[in-house]
Image 1: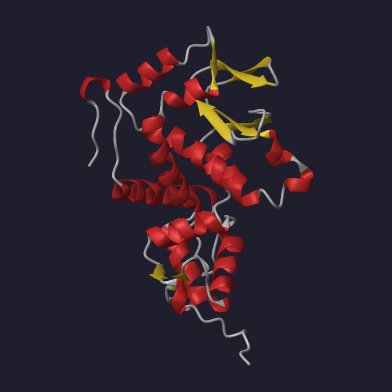
Image 2: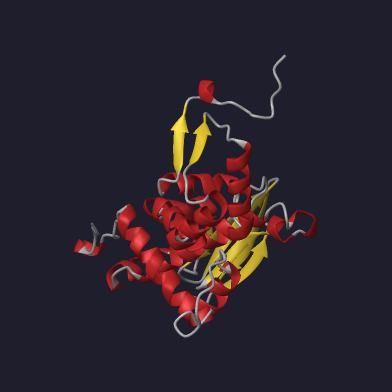
Length: 254
């Protein structure tokens, strides 16, 4: 159930509700961007164009900046103009963070890392988009409380920014996953690549056929293997078995 609204408390959503929100948002986006309501839908697996989703659908501006000294901070967004402070080898540097802006770490824009970091970058952007969607669903009282907290009169560290909304992090992760890996697309991918059957996880090992299906799904949806496994497990497409039952047909026994 949704909890919140009383006294300006932020809402708390169930996983089922987040799934419904994600499905509704993606359906609306697909009609807006792909014109799904007037064109017949092909049965090919379709990745969410998350950059177009952020910019053209949500109206967000996406930029890049060095967000931490050790690369541990992947992205951030804010609901009001403010300043974000980075401490790098003892030097403090301020970056302006505008309302409806998403900042991704500059490592995502490096040409030599673009392909390797594609899945992580897409999930980071989806996560920040989810924050903005969830914020728009809040009551006016909650929105105003956030905007009072994030004042442009003083700079904030990343920890201060995130501590203000730690309650929302798990919701943003869950919603971000539904945006990048909608249930309908997962079902389509599993039907296409795994004949509709479940994948079997033998204590972290998968058969050759399951590994191939998983790789094809990741390539089609533009996500990392880790994110895909979490989503597949959540939707009931992975069966857990002990490692001792794993048999690799490629092994040759003397």
